[in-house]
Amino acid sequence: MSEEEASFDDMDPAELLEEAAQALEAGEKDVAAKILNAVGNIYMGVAEYEEALKCFQQSLGTYKELKDETGVGDALYNLGVAQINLEQWSDAADTCLTAMKMFEKVSNKDGAADAMYALALAKHGLGEFDEALTYFKKAQKAYKSVDNQQGVASTIMDVGNAHADKEDWEPAEKEFKKALKIYRDIDDKAGVADALSLLGDIAEMNDNQRKSAEYFVEAAQNYLDADMTDFAREVVERAEQKLWDLSRSTRRRLRGPIDDIIDALPEKEEIEDSDEDFDESLLDVIE
Image (cartoon, rainbow, N blue to C red; front, top):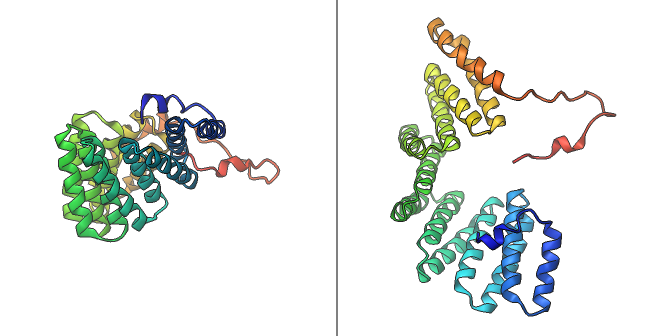
């Protein structure tokens, strides 16, 4: 997203769409295309994927009219990501492949790496495991070439997820540990927490409850450090549930860190068990 598009983030999408329509009427297609793309990103940020899809489609059409290859690549990639979130796997694969080729044509290495990664996700969604792994590895190399360690770690994590989906726990664990090292190196607390949580899942599947609890405690602390309190609460509760299955010495060692994390979490809001006081907004998904 450009700086100009980022400046739209705090604005009302409806007002921005009106501005885009006015820009189109005035013949300012380049302005309209940028606004539509920005609105699509706003909708993506609040998980309104259908609305985002419409905006990216409109933006793409306008960029095509302008023969703006850079804009076409950006809009195609965003469209593909929206299709992935809507689980429109086949359309997403086609869109991301086209975006990748467009980015390569205009020598946008960062964009090509992103599109390759998205293509891998789409292939995984289609159940095409081998092709997904091929594109994940290609994306990993592409991210390395532009020194994007965050991208490298993300692709490694998804290779691990692909193996985990097939219940191939040993290669999955290996990939998560590789990603964990990178996340630690770049001090990405959320990434560290995600990798540790997944390693905890694998340890649990392999009936290694002590290791699982240790992973969950460390994951919870990192989620807390990343201000992701809902995830921290969920993971620390999983760790706490395991304590009585562990040796006394392990319980004593983990009890303190668990209590510290729980004490640092905000208190849960008490929901009145009454129709009269029920707040329907509590049903909203919080991202």
